[in-house]
Length: 134
Image (cartoon, rainbow, N blue to C red; front, top):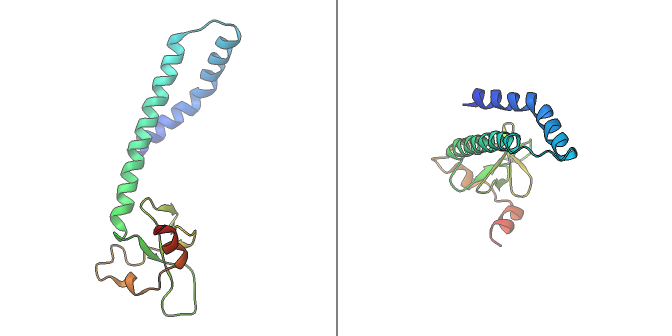
């Protein structure tokens, strides 16, 4: 699916300049053409819908790999046995291999779905708790 979307994006990128030129000329010369507007609108709408569907699939994949409660250990090196756990929220923001907690702290999904509840042993970030339970 990603390769097809990429091809559609490249196609749009390649033609968008001339599409905008046609629309601009149409407006400047006051020669409206519904067919050009409809074609561009349909292409943008179809591509937008496909991107939104793919986004939902990616979100589902991400959520399937994270603990249900959304608490992840903080990324980075600390000189303590357990690092602070942050909550990544219902729609986690992923930046490469890390996720951002609601307080902005980078977190690693060390334990995956965490079936043995290891993340529960980490101290909870006070800022994340405050933002979650307002």
